[in-house]
Length: 413
Image 1: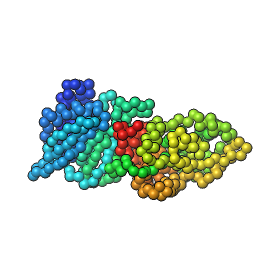
Image 2: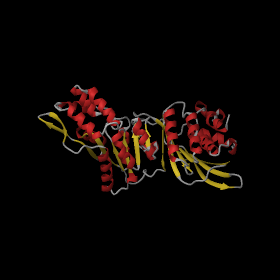
Image 3: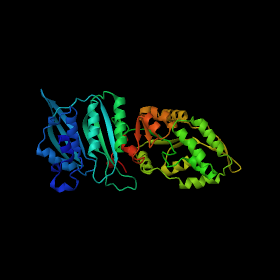
Image 4: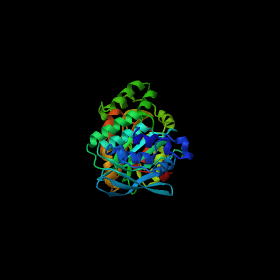
């Protein structure tokens, strides 16, 4: 058994009072093992019983962290002083290891569905190895999630890894993390060290299949008795296989003559995306400005605006005559280019650089705004969109975005 396996799974590393979780990976064990993995030499780390005993501290504590405090070089190794903390309790330890020197700082956020058995050791080992293979080393790990928080939203387990060292092949590394995430059904987000946790910022969102669990135009089509035909066109458009404007006009024409009374019926039953309420409540408290940029319809977007206290809405306004849809809209169609333009316009109005913006969406018409935002996130997206986006989230609710920004449950309401 390698040192890494011992640190992640050894029952001997848990205190006598914490045997119930003795096989769960721990922050300290993971941290120390990754330092060794940076050069592929398990024996490089020299442990004492105190180091192993300290791991029990991190079994179930929320907001626990372990960070490098200092490094000193000798001819053959570096001595690392690291500080661990849980709440107000802080502990200092010293360990010797060979590690890579820090050059640039990036953050890897690992998000996985809650499990009583804790983090999956294989996922952690493969993630640590992927970082090491690309020239990175972990200088800190922090648990962002509190598995015991009271919430009606899906509960995630989240670790934030601080990575030092220049990643040799960023695109290869990104692809490796994407494959790892898909294999283990987790989210792994790599980005520059958090810069969006303080100060003014702007977050914009697609609506259909992002803020709500539906495509409204498909719901309208169902009421018109042409659901299958319109849904097929929608699917191709969202995958980027049809021009959005062309497909939008085609679908709208099919809805001509539909009674407007169906709008209210659909609106009252639209399912809100899990995590949306918690996300927007916290964004508001953090001082963010928010907006919906949607290729859907203002009738529904404005109701969401009221529900979630969103600052602005940009969507398509349905044209009606004598209580019937005409199959036309009254405004310029909000397509991918328009979303990109609106994001730039809103940022300029706030005197914000695009690096202080977040964009979230699931369809091909969201890709242009995802590409220019400081943090562009494909959310539960179609495969082509996920492949085109720099970041993606697929396993949790919308509120997992708060972890990617850099906040812990201890920071949030």
